[in-house]
Amino acid sequence: MSSNSQDIRRAILAKWHENLSKYGNLFSSDSISGTSPPSVFVGSYNYPKVFVGPMVPPIHGDTSILDSPEKWKGKSLEEIVNFRLNLIRGIQKISIDQTEGRYIENLQEITMSSKPADSDLQFTKTTSASVSLDGESAPFGPVGEIKSAKFYDTSATKSIEKIYYDKDLNAQDAVLNLYNSGIDISKIQKCFSIGMLGQRRKLVPTKWSITATDDIISKSLISEILDYPLIDSYRIFTYEHLGNLFSVILFPHRWIYEMIEAWYSNGILGFGYDFEDARGIDHPPAIAGAYFAAKLGVSEYLVKNKIQAGVMVLREIRPEYAIPVGVWQVREGIRSAMKQSPMFGNSFDDALVLASNKTSISKLEWISKGNIMKLIHQKTIADFF
Image (tube, rainbow, N blue to C red; front, side):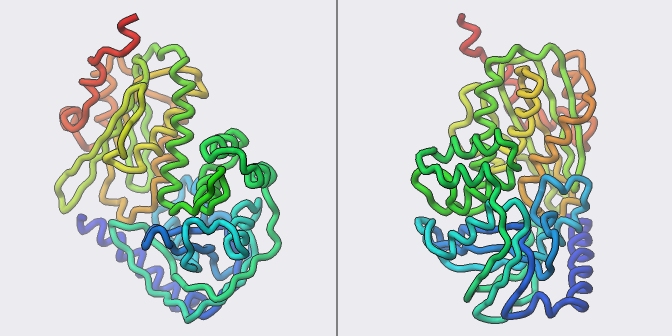
């Protein structure tokens, strides 16, 4: 990463240490009393026996902002990193098949809560307030192995409670039911992760549940989109936040979708991409969860406007994005892009020029790293009827 990224990380870490000089005793203790946003986390290390537990800040009150990505529009990278660092993560090692029992059921109860939940955690030893920030992994606050945990004053969200007790509903339908009920995607992901959905329930590592939820919802939306009429214009939407610049091109074509990412590593530009047609994608995307997060944001727009289109998403990850904070920022970035007033192009090439001009990367570079031109010129099943 460039020195710019390193400088940003150093500055954020320095402010965190400054904060610890005043409140460090709250983060280095064998117990914590605070209000969970509510938030739970399921790790992937040592799968299928994983570390599972609540995330709690050492403060009481309305802490919902600390783990609600849908509310983070306009927040700076430093603010979001601090939200993460202020959450102390309690853990116990649990088998993924263990979705019952007092500890897990308590976590499920706070997950379905409609408001932050007061929590008292006792740890087996004093937690360490020492944290590290790098350009590869998401930031986390202190971690402590739980000896005992108590939660108070939860209030179940009715639509989640109904799905929780419906063990005849499969996980995919449960996710869609909650989404169509207006539950935030970040909330659905937590329910999925802590083993609350489906017929054969399991704990699902948080990072996997995030991608699975985005995939399930976007796939369902696209099944609707395939019945809509084609868009009759070339539209370009752009949005920038947290050092990520998104340019989205919609063009007249049966559903095809490509996402290309570009990033800087030691001053060298790297690329990654993946794509699909109306049959979907049959392998894990080369660009991982960002692929599904962006697809969900675009497909919501198409469903809302009852139109079908070919889609190309360009994501330029700039050095200012010095600390990765999760694929939620791709989903919310694309959602924000699709709410902007679009530019209009006269052709696909014209639209690509307009989209590329918003980035620091040329049209030819973007095109050479992807597959969109082949996709556009391939015959579709519809061409034979």
